Each structure stands twice: as C-alpha cells, then as structure tokens.
Amino acid sequence: MNPEIVVLNDSNESDISIESNDKLKNIKKKNKKKCSFDDYDSSDFEFPEIQFYHLIAENNEDELQNIYNKHSFISNIHASSYQTNDKYTVNKNLKQYNMIKKSSCSDNNSFNFAKNSDEKNRNIAKQKKDILKKEEKIQQMMKKKALKAIAIKKSKNIKPGECLKFMEIVIDKDIENFSYITDIISTLLNTSLQYSIKSQFISNSITWKRNIENHYINENNEICAITNTENINQILIIWNWDETVIKVANDSFCTSISDIKSLLPNYKIILVIFGIENYFEYKMQEKIQIKVKQKTKRKKLIPKIIMNIKTL
Image (cartoon, rainbow, N blue to C red; front, side, top):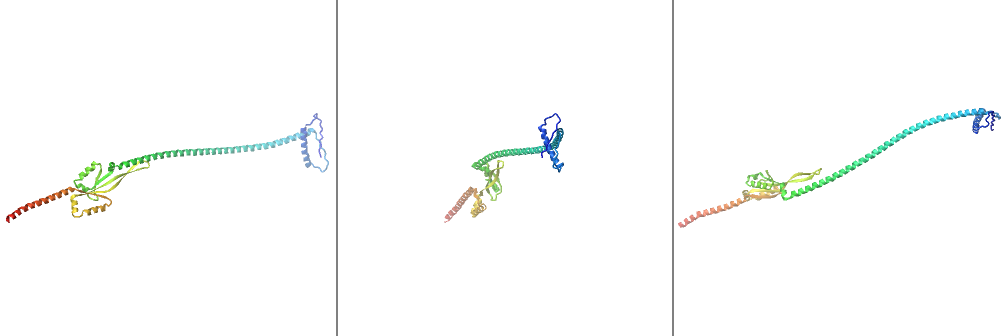
C-alpha cells in the first residue's frame, strides 16, 4: 500500500527542492519499515501520516545531521584506525625496507669486498707466479753458466801439463838410507810435484796417488769442490844391485817377484835395480883379478919350470 504524504505549507516558500523530497522519501521508507515491525496493528486499516513540512524538514535535517555525524564519527574512527594502521604498516614496512636495504647494502658490500679480495688475491698470485718464473729463469741461467765453468775446468785439469799438479808421490822411508834419495827429491821439486815420505807396506817402494777435484752445484747454483784421493795402481820397487845378485844366485829372485804380485794383484810392478853398473865393474874387476892371479901363477910357474929343465 503506497503511503501518501500531505504537506500543508503556510510559509511563503512555494517550491520544495527535489533533493529534500528525495531525502524525505528515503527517510519515510525507513520509518515505515520500523513501524511495520514496532507499531504493527492487526487491523488492516492504516491511517495516513500527516506531517508538516517544517517539522519533517527539521526532523529530517536533524536526523540526517545525526546520521551524517554518526557516519562521520564512524568514518573518522575507521579513518583514524585505518590511518593508525596505515601509519603502523608504513612504519613497519619502512623499517623492513630499511632493514632489507641495509641487508642488501651489507650483502653488496660483502660481495664487493669478496670480489675485490678475490681480485687482489688473483693479482698477488699472478705477481708471485711472475716472480717465481723470473727467479727460475735466473736460476737456470746461473746453473747453465756454472755447468759450463765446471766443464772448462775439468777439461783443463785433464791436460798433461795440469794433471801432474794433482799427483802426489809417496816415498818409502827406507829409501832415505840410500844416496840416490837426494836425486829423487831434487827431480820432484824441479817438476813442481807434491811428495811425502812415509812407511810403505813394501820396503824401498814408491807409489802414486791422485787428488781428484769433484765439482758440483749447490742449491744456490754455486760451484763447490770436494777433493777425493785415488790410488794409482802402480808401484816402483828399488833393489840394490848386490841384493838382486844374491837373489839371483840363490834362486829367490822370481819367488820374491811372485810374492809382491800376490800382494798387489791389480798393480803394475816396476822393478829398478840400483847400482847395476857397480855389478859390472865388480865383474870386470873380478875378471881382472882372475887374470892377474893367472899371470902371477904363470910367473911363479916359469922359474920352477926353468929350474926343472936345468936339473935335467
């Protein structure tokens, strides 16, 4: 059932704005709903409501104002809460953003530091590698130079005039009892040879030994030398002529030589018979003496023969 609104207007205002009527209609609809639930009458007949314009306008304006104020208050509350929440959210988000920014900055700084550190380490490693290569080249050059110097020195030491400088002659002490010792020593001194006089395992013998210089290169590519002594497998044995004659006379000469060879199996044995000319002189004198004796005998025999002839 459509409600009817009768407006009695005693004012001079003749026109009602469309906007006010629309508001009144909306308010009426709301009031009708309230009446239908609150003031419900079992009677089917409804009296039409009569409202004066000014009252309706005032009430509606007041109600509208209250509703507006209420909505404004609620909206303000919500707005303030939203604003508070937004502020909190913004602050929270700002803090999170700052934290993320700081974290990202820290990560970037860490990444940049790690990158710079890796690059620096690579540069240092490259520099060290270059330095090591240069040092290796220098060491190789030094080693090559040292090996060349060793080869030159070795070839020089092999030469006949140089190799004698490394020889040492060892003379048995028994040789000092002979007169020829002076000749031996003077000869050695004239040739600038080293010698020593000591007891040997074979009497009246002379042996040789060579002082060999072995060169090598140390860790600093410096030439170092070690002197090693090498015994020469050669021996010179001096027998006096009278000793030799005696050994030959009693058949012990060959036996004596065999004994020496058994003691020195790998040695070259040189036998020197000193004063052999004296032997020949002796033999000559012996022959002369024999001849003289024979002559003297003949001289002695001649007178006897003559006497014997006379007696006949």
